[in-house]
Length: 401
Image (tube, rainbow, N blue to C red):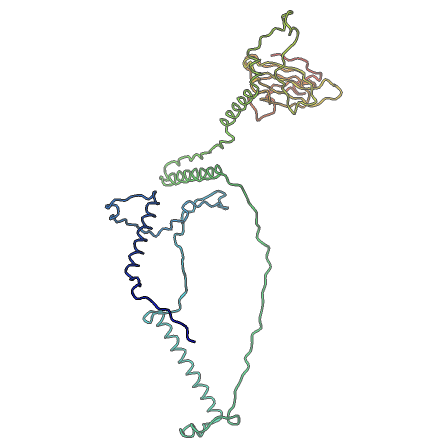
């Protein structure tokens, strides 16, 4: 039984134009909704929309670095690389096509023609030698016989020859490996700055030398003074600033002790007070070098009231050790300002009354020395009594200027 076909109503079919108009209306509503949602879009005027914006293309690579600094192992400092490659290869392919009218194409044609002529001459020489040895073939002049005759194993002769092969020779040489050295350093910003400054100083020095050479030979050569840049980390101004900062930090950390030292009311002499006969401990001056040593003498500086010197020795006369002189200040009780060592124990010290930088020292072995505290880097005394000056061997118990 055949399937039943569905009947369509002719009058109920919707026109295509109505569907297109409804779809366009829906698109307009969707676009209006999206435009209303984009509130952060900038509104442009008609003049701004009609304005033509030009963009200029240059041959420079915008991603190429312009300040490449490399370390020169020859000169031992950093250098700026002036040449920067601006070429960027996106695609590269080696071609094998030649232009017919170019010189390369003509050279290639000449090479092929010469090769063809050489091959033809070599073939003619081989045929002439065969004819000379075996005679002329009777069928060479008969063209019909040439077409009918065919070579076979009886009338065909093969000529072969074995060439001489040169032996393969290998030559080797053993040498010492080149000397290498491994160098590594952690680069910081101030190291790069110092390298730039070193380059700048070298440039100034070379310019001064060239100016001196450009002058006449009869004239006296100008003396070139080499400028030495002091390292700011080890300069005297940096040391002075660090000392002041250390004192300020110590005073802030121990502000209570400094306020007691400045504003404390001493009532130890009053018998009626509770603190009669007692003292208020403020600071303890110690150092690692003064361990297992006895304090043998102390002396205050006559000019700087916060500075005093301590002498370290030993009262065990059978076991004498080395001596030590430390100059402490109340502004920084954590570490001595100056320190000097002696071979024998120090028994007495005294500051000069008018020159506060000079200290007279008396030792257990009878030596008398004079130190200058301004010479920090030099641990040796500026004066020392020796056997040549007829020094005595008994302990020096007191020295005075």
